[in-house]
Length: 408
Image: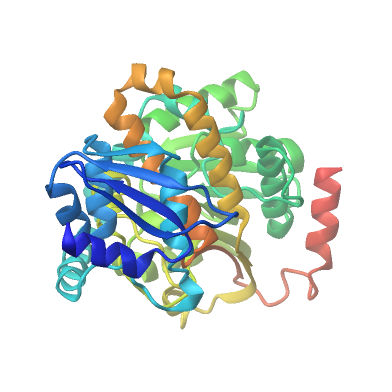
């Protein structure tokens, strides 16, 4: 335990962490903090500490999933909050990052994994988005928006915040009735149906998830708009035609840096000469990096959250006008806290649907994501582009006016 003791004593300054070792030894780290719940962990065997030392995120995640790291006081969100509060992104210490050798290995491995050719893209999407429809119904809002909500007030409900997200994005798209819209990575169809219902757009939504496709098509049929809102199982690289607007929410994270420029070029080619595009993506506040090993292995294989510099390089030279860039800092943290609360409230149903190991994996994923936006280096970017310098008003007033009208 000596090495893990040194590691934890260096990390944990704020908050109280207690470790109960497999041999009965008890160790206390940090100091009580009224803003942080105390956390007590039990290590089932000597290998738990060693796994955490090799790679904090991967080791903690895997031993927690397997039940070898048990949380006896507090919960997994309390644990990851305590650890990341002591290692905030803005402090620049990065004490929880893997060793240099592990970082080098991960950099090579996950650059290869992010090479998302079409077959790999479909397989990676299925890994996450083709999980049971029942699972997503348990923790998402009624409209199945599986991306960052927009909280005009942090006290708003998740349902309200997701509806406000749709209005926020729709206002930026500046759509007029009858316009053709392409929704890349359409999820369960909520955005496409909204743009048709509220703005009279004709929408094609594309996805690589067969389960999402079934739900989206059913929703369009039930709403009586299947002739105006269509969905297809197709890679964005295979889409043809011309569109007045393109929207993509929560899909760019799966494109892979090697394909960013091809993605932006394809979108430009699909836009009409007066076309406008809105790209909503998780992003890095700092420089380009590497997806953490646990997330890449268990949650989003092939996934990567881009730095703003990587997005800029992707559209430079393509004659696209960047017409608006917005940074959403805490909105996803609030969204994820809602998802985490709903997930834990439905523990019995999720365990029955899968098993206890899956439930622990899912809560570790959501808890880690919460703190990545609260204390880590993640944010959300909304970037607007146009092929024309005159297609959009020259001030942002139209966005605010359009959003108020849609919300009203």
